[in-house]
Length: 239
Length: 362
Image (cartoon, rainbow over all chains, first blue to last red; front, side, top):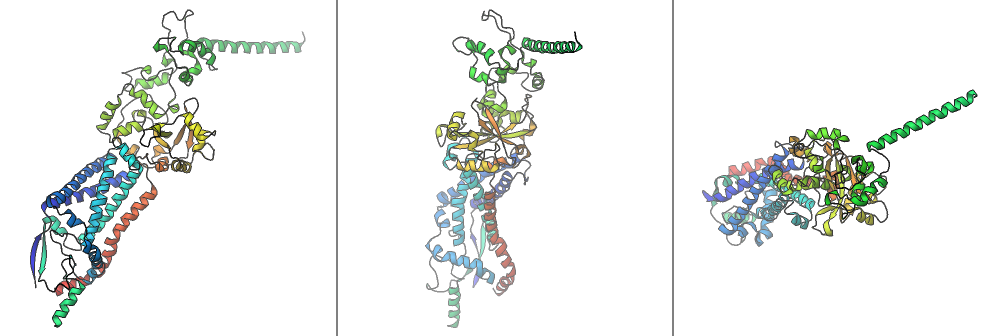
């Protein structure tokens, strides 16, 4: 038995943050490409416009990042729970989610994970976002701030290993963000991820919970699509 | 007289005439004050007083060491101060030559520029110190400009449109943007952190220090390892990688210095400089300090010389210096990001029927 249910997954501050961030990062990638390869790319009118756009977008994304951190950590107080994988995620969740993406999805099975407002991300999302939001974004932002103020922050730049190291780090981190962006956008098309990020609500099918504790793996919800669960269903039918 | 004797006498007369004519010309040249011989001895007479701070008023002091480096020293004091009275110093002013007497072309050029209404030659050049721009570092050229153009004011004014204006003003000679030169070269100076501090400002290293580092060999051998008086890009790379304290700083300098100072809109286009392998940045020299206090210019292999400087940790020019290996690593990272959309997307397309069947079943 199943019925349609709507859950409010993405609150409006997060939706605004996400789309500011998304457009900002795309602008940063495009303008950054022209700044690094001016002899091959001229997407903006002039080199100076590319620099100005890049600087402005960088500042906006940095502010938006700070807002994201402040909102989840201080207002909602769910930052750790949402983004740091727990023991169960590491032990079983990651493998299960990987198996889903690599095999079960192709066989037509639904995702083993359904998001709730307090557990929005599956274990793979958690791990990826942990790396992106706690390592890549802060580092790319900090190196960007250093490059924006080469003369005033000269000593800091030298402490970090010199301007060339900072530039190399900023460039490689930006490439990693672009790589993440490709994967992120593609994976968003695998489930109902885009609609909640636009309107906030997600339509979910509410199943009747079946089965005992022996099939429910603690900490990982829901268990409906696990192979063990399907086996339990079959056993129930036979009995 | 025999005809042979007559012939000999005629030849002697011709020779005597020639000698008289040459002597007359030399005498005339001396009278004009132009002499192209060694003027050290005649300058010494003047410098015996004017080269000592206590002997003459402050404004009449001439630093003998720095004066010797100027082109003016070689033509001698008398070339510009021709009519020094016999009872000098009697308190009367000694007349000076007009710069236009020799530099009339420059004077015409200067008259067309923005500075013409503001100051004359001596506003920027002290004739007793002036050196060829090739013999001084770009930083020294800018010191002349900063006598009138306050650095802080200029940084603020340029900052209205120029990103990182302080950095630009420190790393470029003003004349690169404010004169309409057509050709440029990259002049590389050997620099070192002030006081050997890790965070010290980079300063041009002086002759004596480099000489000690070279250990008796010519200074250029620190970079030009095969001593062919020509620095290849590979030699530049090796120098940058192997040196711990010394660095090379490149400055884009006009090949021919114009005296027509102007504000050129073309210089507001950043890609005038910020492009890898720009046509304007193919010719380079290493300015090696020499014992006289000027620089010896050693040619460098043509090409994207700033790319070769990539190994230096504290020199980077956006859009112009980039490491090809780093670009490849970046490309590899981006390709990794495409594995999921391309690889997974392909299998997703092939197995689309499985998911449709499941949807129908549910």
